Image (cartoon, rainbow, N blue to C red; front, side, top):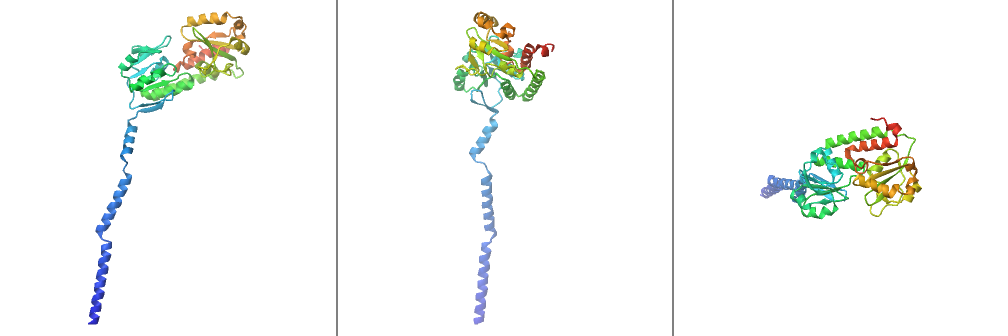
Length: 347
């Protein structure tokens, strides 16, 4: 009897242990745990709403860049209605096969043939903002020198506005590539730049290595004369040809670090091999200024460059304004002037 009771108790204990063990590893519990783990993994992998919005916004931006006034310009789509307020910049845009719907005009500025029929929005320094805004442009391109005052007007109207400087060869290369992106013609822009670099290299490779003539370059306007110091296309072309700018060490003007105040006494002291004159505006007015303010002075006549006929008025379209993809013509012109024995028989 005692033996039977003992056996029964042992069987009941074993049964209860088996049930307890089965409950601890039941399929239902395992499934629930797996689901919880899976849900945690999915939740960690899915982006948050804010990150999704950021990605969508990035996808909508066509191009973002910093202009030469240190302003961030963002275009949501490729611009189709561009207005250009500088003849130089307009010429460059068309040179990379871009187009504009309107332009500003300038005395002496050259307009690309294909751009002659587009709308005018006034002069480069007298832009008609009412007409400009009526065209509903999706990008306006202007000059850092002349169009900063338009920033507030265009920003208030939510019109993207970029300000650029086009003086040096580096400026040309940078803007040509950017304009190629704007126009969707970046390969053509890069091809044109490569061709220009080859043309310039073919000219500068022939510069005599044993010569380094000195020069000074003067800006002449109807009302003033100043000396070029640095960061101008004329000086850059001259330096490509191994000429040395004696005005580089002169103290800069307060309003423009690229120029120095004019001093005939200082020029006589420096006595450069060449004196180059660049006329702003109408050539006839500039020549009158040279005659009245320079040629009439005995000190001017005493300059070695003047006595030996190495004073020249240079073409403004090649060596005052950046000529864009005609920069090789600028190099060739000055090379023939300074080194006639080497370049004089090129044509």
